[in-house]
Image (cartoon, rainbow, N blue to C red; front, side, top):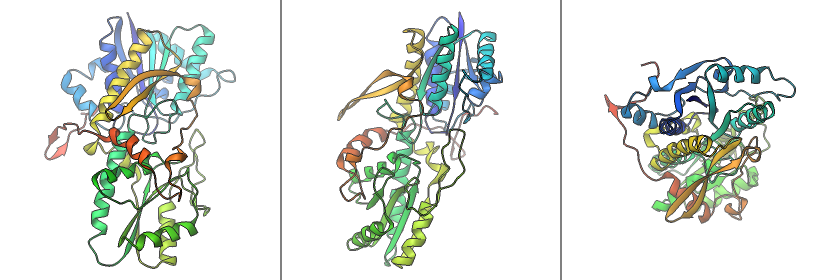
Length: 402
């Protein structure tokens, strides 16, 4: 008998707790697993030996079902970058000591491409030192920019929220007789997957957003103005979706960076609002969706949650049944219609610190919208609605402090 540990890292999503549930469910099915530990605040919890016994927290099926539909990370998160262990192995020794102290033989890290850097380094260290601990990555991110996997858990729910919110913004913008431009800034630092996903509204006959701009495309303020003017010839209320990472060469991005060197971005929507007012003069509004995109579980995708749980379960099987380590679990899409995926593994060295860009061939020739291929890719990921439990008219969330 031995124990396992799981942790969550990076930005929260509506599905990361579903993956945690999957890891727990998978571990419960393995007779050789005794305790199932959850680390507080990602890898920092392992370094500092802050472990919670999940068997004493997830007591029954109701707890697990509630956790499935609870957004964010109940274990907490971190943005902690491990140093190269060849240069400084102090944290690695603390991690190994924690695992040894608690008889942990497998570690599952739920996170994005930066979190996979931790998986890669830990696997390298354990292999070099002859320590028999399996390390497996479970993907998550609303940015959908993790390589080797068709998509990431958390993205489908974020895309569904963005589309539903944009539809409501569209309804609001059309009530007045005067022309207007509404600019919606959507998360996506270096990859435009989430802004591009707003195209799913076309499946219900909605022409908006009329313009979509992504970091992968070419953008110039002058071309943008011409695009808006052309859209105004047909639409009274023009809706623009734009990724936060689009650069107008105006210095709107922040110089503040996180532990992995990524800039904190904001401001392109507000800048375009002023620019549009100055050059067109109609009613203009900018809306930054901000963190609401990440944890809006009230309109989550059931497909997303079920897949997140499934990939967590498969991670446990890969490590404990097939002996996998130094890998990340991946979705491989078999078809769009009917939608079918299989779960595979990929070498972590192909994933850590890499980014999957939105395909340029899915951006139209004008650089201001996306193609039907993008619509066909996105649409299956937002299907289905989870059944939520309510109290006093508000969805109930699973909380460790209750």
